[in-house]
Amino acid sequence: MAILTVFAAGTAILTPAPLVSRRGVSIAAASASLLPSLLPLHTALADPPRTSLTDRSGNYVVDIQKAAAGLEDPLAEPEGAFSTISAALAVAPAGSTVLVRAGTYTERVFVTRPGIQLLAEPGAVVAWRSDKPYEAALTVDLSEAASGGSVTISGLTVRHSSPSIAQNYAVYVPPPSRAASATKVELRDLDVSSSSGSGLGVEGGDVTLLSSKVHDCRNHGLVFLGPSARGAVRGCELAKNKLNGVLLRDGASPAIEGS
Image 1 (cartoon, helix red, strand yellow):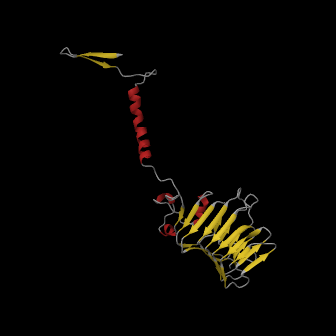
Image 2: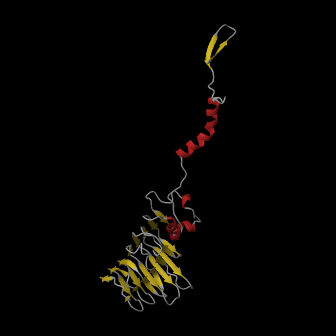
Image 3: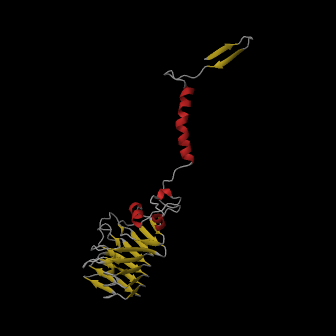
């Protein structure tokens, strides 16, 4: 359908009539009304807000300087970063790598799922001193894990003090769940000391300590307890521990090589 318009000078112009939907709404008007809602979507697609908790390589980064600057939200930083190791581990899924920048982190650290790599720069220190018992500085607790895998912790310095008679460890590995019983835990290039107890306590699981220093512990350097406590100690320096360098009890069977 078209509209014929005749002007005074006798000129006629034939123009098409506006398209109308079956409901009587101008299609051109309806299209124009959608533009304001489409424009913000286009802008969002062109310049998306930051939603990643990782750096550009997909790693979860921990940087103590964020805490000093009062920055707590990893989304606020171009590269993303967490102010505590615990915060990064809380959101890092299995298969993730957590990178720890140099600095002293006054917190208890728990690794509770297989498939995690916790890699520290030189100078990264986990320091935990408490007047409460049974508080290790670093715990690898897979007792509720639903599957197996591996855990790697590398480069950390661990300092610990917590008064208790039993389970007084700077680094503690309790027995894993049955589903995670085959999980391999590798602790590499650690520097561990406990002024109240032992350096490393393994009460179950496959745990290997590599190229690490365990020293100046009030009790033992390393303790492996129970028939499921296995793995290896390779190339480690055990020095100035008040009691045994390595204590094996109740059927524990790690291989001791070059230490």
